[in-house]
Length: 124
Image 1 (cartoon, rainbow, N blue to C red):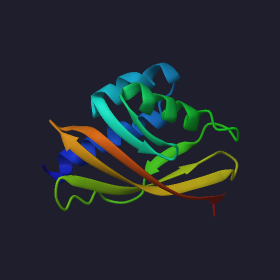
Image 2 (cartoon, rainbow, N blue to C red):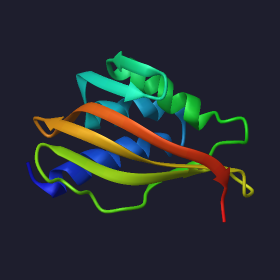
Image 3 (cartoon, rainbow, N blue to C red):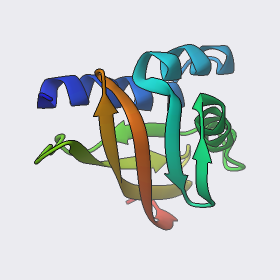
Image 4 (cartoon, helix red, strand yellow):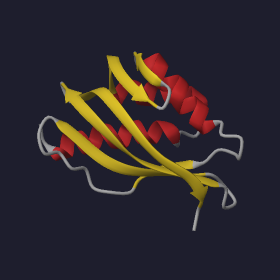
Protein backbone atom coordinates (compact mmCIF):
# COMPACT_ATOMS: atom_id res chain seq x y z
CA UNK A 1 0.00 0.00 0.00
CA UNK A 2 1.38 3.40 -0.94
CA UNK A 3 1.37 6.38 1.36
CA UNK A 4 -0.41 8.45 -1.30
CA UNK A 5 -3.34 5.99 -1.32
CA UNK A 6 -3.53 6.07 2.47
CA UNK A 7 -3.32 9.87 2.49
CA UNK A 8 -6.17 10.13 -0.02
CA UNK A 9 -8.45 7.86 2.06
CA UNK A 10 -7.53 9.70 5.27
CA UNK A 11 -8.10 13.15 3.76
CA UNK A 12 -11.50 12.07 2.41
CA UNK A 13 -12.38 10.71 5.87
CA UNK A 14 -11.36 14.01 7.49
CA UNK A 15 -13.37 15.96 4.92
CA UNK A 16 -16.53 14.37 6.36
CA UNK A 17 -15.94 16.37 9.56
CA UNK A 18 -15.78 19.57 7.50
CA UNK A 19 -18.63 18.93 5.04
CA UNK A 20 -20.79 21.94 4.27
CA UNK A 21 -23.90 20.01 5.32
CA UNK A 22 -24.63 16.87 7.38
CA UNK A 23 -26.20 15.26 4.30
CA UNK A 24 -22.74 14.93 2.70
CA UNK A 25 -21.15 13.05 5.62
CA UNK A 26 -22.33 9.57 4.60
CA UNK A 27 -21.19 10.00 0.99
CA UNK A 28 -17.73 11.14 2.06
CA UNK A 29 -17.38 8.29 4.54
CA UNK A 30 -18.50 5.80 1.86
CA UNK A 31 -15.67 7.04 -0.36
CA UNK A 32 -13.05 6.44 2.34
CA UNK A 33 -14.28 3.50 4.49
CA UNK A 34 -15.21 -0.12 3.86
CA UNK A 35 -18.82 -0.92 4.74
CA UNK A 36 -17.62 -3.24 7.54
CA UNK A 37 -15.14 -0.75 9.03
CA UNK A 38 -14.17 -1.39 12.65
CA UNK A 39 -13.99 1.79 14.70
CA UNK A 40 -12.07 1.90 17.97
CA UNK A 41 -13.14 5.24 19.43
CA UNK A 42 -13.28 6.96 22.78
CA UNK A 43 -16.31 4.89 23.81
CA UNK A 44 -15.03 1.51 22.67
CA UNK A 45 -15.39 -0.69 19.60
CA UNK A 46 -18.13 -0.39 17.00
CA UNK A 47 -18.62 -1.58 13.43
CA UNK A 48 -19.92 -0.15 10.19
CA UNK A 49 -20.04 3.21 8.47
CA UNK A 50 -23.12 4.13 10.53
CA UNK A 51 -21.13 3.98 13.78
CA UNK A 52 -18.40 6.21 12.33
CA UNK A 53 -21.09 8.54 10.96
CA UNK A 54 -22.60 8.92 14.46
CA UNK A 55 -19.14 9.81 15.82
CA UNK A 56 -18.50 12.35 13.03
CA UNK A 57 -21.93 13.96 13.51
CA UNK A 58 -21.37 14.18 17.28
CA UNK A 59 -18.10 16.03 16.66
CA UNK A 60 -19.74 18.26 14.02
CA UNK A 61 -22.45 19.22 16.54
CA UNK A 62 -20.04 20.15 19.33
CA UNK A 63 -21.74 22.36 21.96
CA UNK A 64 -19.18 25.12 21.32
CA UNK A 65 -20.21 25.23 17.66
CA UNK A 66 -19.20 23.45 14.51
CA UNK A 67 -15.46 23.27 14.26
CA UNK A 68 -12.77 22.30 11.84
CA UNK A 69 -10.87 19.01 11.68
CA UNK A 70 -7.48 19.06 9.95
CA UNK A 71 -4.68 16.58 9.43
CA UNK A 72 -1.64 18.27 10.99
CA UNK A 73 1.06 15.78 10.05
CA UNK A 74 2.15 13.70 7.15
CA UNK A 75 0.86 10.17 6.78
CA UNK A 76 3.37 7.69 8.17
CA UNK A 77 2.89 4.19 6.81
CA UNK A 78 5.60 1.84 8.08
CA UNK A 79 3.70 -1.37 7.21
CA UNK A 80 0.01 -2.15 6.64
CA UNK A 81 -1.07 0.51 9.12
CA UNK A 82 -0.91 4.27 8.59
CA UNK A 83 -0.92 6.94 11.25
CA UNK A 84 -1.40 10.68 11.28
CA UNK A 85 -2.03 13.50 13.73
CA UNK A 86 -5.12 15.66 13.66
CA UNK A 87 -6.58 18.65 15.45
CA UNK A 88 -10.20 19.74 15.89
CA UNK A 89 -10.82 23.37 16.78
CA UNK A 90 -14.15 25.01 17.55
CA UNK A 91 -14.92 28.64 16.65
CA UNK A 92 -13.95 31.70 18.67
CA UNK A 93 -11.00 30.13 20.44
CA UNK A 94 -13.24 27.36 21.78
CA UNK A 95 -12.10 23.90 22.80
CA UNK A 96 -9.35 22.22 20.85
CA UNK A 97 -8.98 18.47 20.70
CA UNK A 98 -5.86 16.88 19.24
CA UNK A 99 -4.88 13.29 18.71
CA UNK A 100 -3.50 10.57 16.51
CA UNK A 101 -5.43 8.08 14.41
CA UNK A 102 -4.06 4.76 13.24
CA UNK A 103 -5.83 3.23 10.25
CA UNK A 104 -5.62 -0.03 8.32
CA UNK A 105 -6.48 -0.11 4.63
CA UNK A 106 -8.03 -2.81 2.48
CA UNK A 107 -8.68 -2.29 -1.23
CA UNK A 108 -7.64 1.35 -0.92
CA UNK A 109 -10.28 2.02 1.76
CA UNK A 110 -9.97 2.29 5.53
CA UNK A 111 -11.24 -0.90 7.19
CA UNK A 112 -10.08 -0.13 10.76
CA UNK A 113 -9.70 3.14 12.65
CA UNK A 114 -8.13 3.53 16.08
CA UNK A 115 -8.56 7.00 17.62
CA UNK A 116 -6.14 8.24 20.27
CA UNK A 117 -7.50 11.61 21.43
CA UNK A 118 -5.55 13.99 23.60
CA UNK A 119 -6.73 16.59 26.07
CA UNK A 120 -9.28 19.24 25.22
CA UNK A 121 -7.65 22.63 25.69
CA UNK A 122 -8.11 26.17 24.41
CA UNK A 123 -6.45 26.85 21.06
CA UNK A 124 -3.35 28.99 21.21
